[in-house]
Length: 524
Image (tube, rainbow, N blue to C red; front, side, top):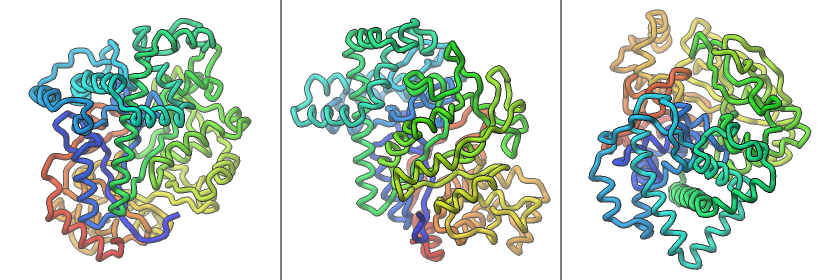
């Protein structure tokens, strides 16, 4: 799929600079696209765009929907430009800085609702941003529903029709969370839990106004996303997205499709997903997502998955499939186990799945996240279908350096090479935590002493010099940022997912330096 040498940067939308506490699809996104163009980049890689939930620490990899957009990313400035909000509304909004907003009890958020819930994590700017932003988003949606011109209303109606196969369930799910005061769907009245048609029809009628607001906010998100991608494509910049293999149990997808997951008679998970102990965690990673009933997926021709892939591929030029190993073999943890240490490897029907995917799409514009101890098991499938995998330069200096697939001298063309990923420490932070043996190997490999003054430059150079056709570097690395700027620490939560770029950090000098490296390595 990767036809020529190119490169790009990894920066999630929420990590863009913002006066509103979280990055969005507004002016700073366009400025970043301009920076990518000025620095000779071809790709902008982001993390999943789906809604986030405080219960999972705002992780974009645990969402209440596999299809909906994260409305926290809607730009208020763009809504002002469309007269859906006034400049006065925005000025009043900006008068109180986000960090001054007090959050005493974090809400349980699912898409477009905000509900009282247990204290699940420490207050942070994500919570504060949501509390501040929600009333203005609601106001803008109501203004649209009241004042939209016929052409705007027609465009909205088309959106609802095109996205109906997920939007109807998602909007009703979110509205029911609010109306029942219960964010967890298995605690709703039994007729709603079991999706009895008469009960759903009755609630759809009763909650009509709230459902329309939820749909309009999804429309705003999609319209702003499409405008940004069009701007990027005009600059020959391609968006690379991300599909988490799993979704969270408390989601519209599980509620609407319970037969596709391993649930008991009370619709509770029998098993949950995760990863065994590895480089990232000695206890493994207990993600808590429900396990797919792959036999049922195969019986339906993987229809739900094909729909999900088609929807996500419509948003991006390239799509990274997270934890691709899970399509071949997955770590199944009994739901009552507190960690991922207890579990077993279970086979998934990867041959049938990939055959169905190839039948549907012929050309597969996807990248496989093929990292981990059992990655070798999926390499034959990736080679057969020509799907690029991933290589991470930080992983290439272990005791197996001569034979490591991550060592630069062992790279091959049809791969995406990273200096590090969103799950790794920044390169400078990685160097700070590396032991003396790792540092000596780096010295021997590069032929001179590596220090915290030159390590980031050298790792970025190795990344760009790799024969792998696509090279991606996190923005933190091109700015030489330390461990305090890490995006995510798998399994630990805490301050993960909250890092943001500051205004003015991406200077002309940074762009020129990156452009020179990009040209020198044949990636411009």
